[in-house]
Image (cartoon, rainbow, N blue to C red; front, side, top):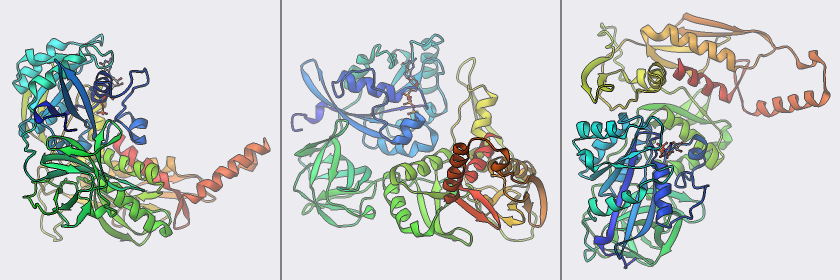
Length: 559
Ligand SMILES: Nc1nc2c(ncn2[C@@H]2O[C@H](COP(=O)(O)OP(=O)(O)OP(=O)(O)O)[C@@H](O)[C@H]2O)c(=O)[nH]1
């Protein structure tokens, strides 16, 4: 790694609105620099998680070191691919701390969207160089000139600085690398100073312990060095350092300006804080500023399906939150569900992805309660001020066809169903982003969902008074669709206090043997039923499959 003087290093991120082509551009950059072989199969190479491949979205920022020859010089380009969805913007802001520039990718057909604006400002505030890249110029409806004008108008970046490419076909991608070298400055670091390494991400490996992703701001770190964590003041010996290429490739040393990974025998996830500074044992330094902690927007209870799994689930949650430090965890318990946790997420998609990762990467089986947003309740009989509806704050025309509107919304209205309604109302053209604007007073009620008179703890929610009826009705209808019929009729009700505001009735179950037919089919059905029983939860005498809760939440987001 000593071959790369600081002036030959560029650290940059790819940021964009969801689906504008970041991961596809990353694939092409990896191919062009020979980091991976060029084959038809290179699709989202940096999206390594199963959940990313299944959903086709990036949820985790990934680092890759690329080696690139340009005019006789060898450059080290450290690329960080980041997620586009608003729920994962914490990944983006952390990644930017290790960079001096960004490629701001914009779809040539869709133009500037909400997260394009949000990501631009993240980069702008961090004083990074921004290279606008207009992607998908191969599309039939592509209009790169219109997008160029938008970029100039909204971001004040001269239109001739835009690079027009097709990441899919590889058209003009080489000019992106040229621009990275010409327009992004090398990191401002000092190799002669004592080591200062920022831990900007980390993962837990069952065999090797914590693997920390580090950006070196000063000095050098070598295998065998004794290092100290500024956060815990514990000392460790470095067992391995290396670069991600894109898989781990050990090197003996890492130098200031470089980005890589470090393994130092941290066995406990609490020891490896994202934002921590690592320094050499006898050379203490002023720690780097680290990161603002993420602000959770959506809260849900999480419980093991079987209480005997509590400790395993605890350890799985700890390991996964190491890799996703934006999730907050507090112990909680419920009469019906036993001991568990109250987790805070950045949005509903984030909650779903975290749940899926727990199941896929840690084989955990959990019950999630209805997501809620935080409220501050004043328990008094005084008059409450009328709930505020959305209030328009401002309106900016991006071009003839596009307008950017700013509103003040109750958070609950956006996390639950706003995004889907906006997408369907605008036939997919509108996009949105949000940030916290503090607490407002509102008329809220607690709504219970009852099955044959017994409260379903997982579905207790706080809703706006005016919406209680429609939300209660939707939940009852969906619960009716998701519950299996049983040997007796089931009353599904939504209630505020003792007042029932909606009701559905699930009719009685008819036994499969009444229909006669093929015996192997019956056996299969019985087997499936027996397997399903393992995942049931009993509320009174009613059996509820675990996934019924999730299905109910999904209806709420599509209503
Ligand atoms: N026609 C065309 N399609 C492209 C191009 N680049 C990407 N795509 C397609 O656009 C879709 C989204 O691409 P991704 O690279 O996954 O987008 P992303 O920005 O990484 O998405 P997230 O990580 O989920 O935010 C995929 O179906 C790509 O095949 C391009 O240049 N032309």
